[in-house]
Amino acid sequence: MKSAAKAYAQAGVDLQQAERIGQFIGQQTKSTFGPEVIGSGFFGSMFQLKEYQKPVLVSSADGVGTKLQIASLLDRHNSVGADIVNHSVNDILCCGAEPLFFLDYIAMGKLAPQQIEAIITGMAQACRDVPCSLIGGETAEMPGTYPRGSYDIAGFIVGVVEKKNIIDGSSIRYGDIILGLPSSGLHTNGYSLVRKVFHVENNPSSLNKIYPELGISLGEALLKIHHCYYHELKPLLSFVHGIAHITGGGFPGNISRILPQDLAAHIYKGTWDVPALFRLIQRQGNINESEMYQVFNMGIGMTIVCSPEQAKRLTQALPQAKVIGEITNRKKIEPVIID
Image 1: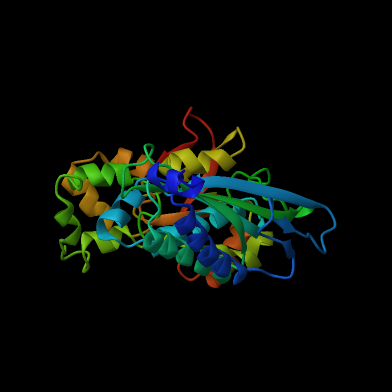
Image 2: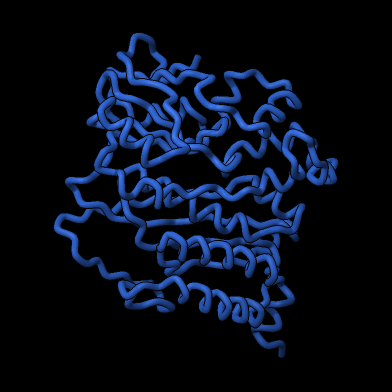
């Protein structure tokens, strides 16, 4: 009679390999633990909150999208592990939250140890950099669901903020200034369009082409890690009225989320230099400029709304920040005007 493990392996799931991968993941996750982690490796992980008066937990879940296709074609997976952590940290930072712990989900048709190890290594390094505990997760082998060689990852983060320090945009006022912090590239959005523009599926070698304006290959430019803004902004949160992470939906889809109903954000093009990668994508794909701002971050990864009085303080503390707009009364249906 076949053992259950052998029968399961013939069905496409290798329990022994999963156990070996789990041991590696356990080593990586423990390197991110702080003293607040009081239990991991059980059916649930435990984290103890300390030194908060009225703590409010802030959570977020996200993925990396089809940037994974670029990583797979180039066989470079560390960066997407860091991407999902940094993206998640940025999201809860918009509420003023300090990250506590992170959980991951990795699914593939057939477990590929080298890929998983690279992804987890990238995640763990990004968590240590914050710091944030990589407290648990799930690695799923799903034959018949994912084609061999493909995979998906998702991240789940929990952070905390004192109730009195929550940033929700409610203090945004007419005349406030909008600052923009530069992105490191596309971050984790717009890759389905990029893959179509450069015919990546039909011609993967296009990722190896070096464009003079980029100075590196297209693939290297597309895999640049999503920048984490936590350390830059943490000391300055008390001077901020609102923060918008420019991800899927671009400027209109994200800045509108923090605006009071009677106010609009006026973004002035030309107040920052749009990086060459975005100009290349627009030219290569013959994409309308307004759509570019709806899909991509256009070189601005995070926007900060503050009073005119605090704008000077923030730009001095954040030398790369640019004044890119202002808050005005909403006269049209559109809450975000870009011109």
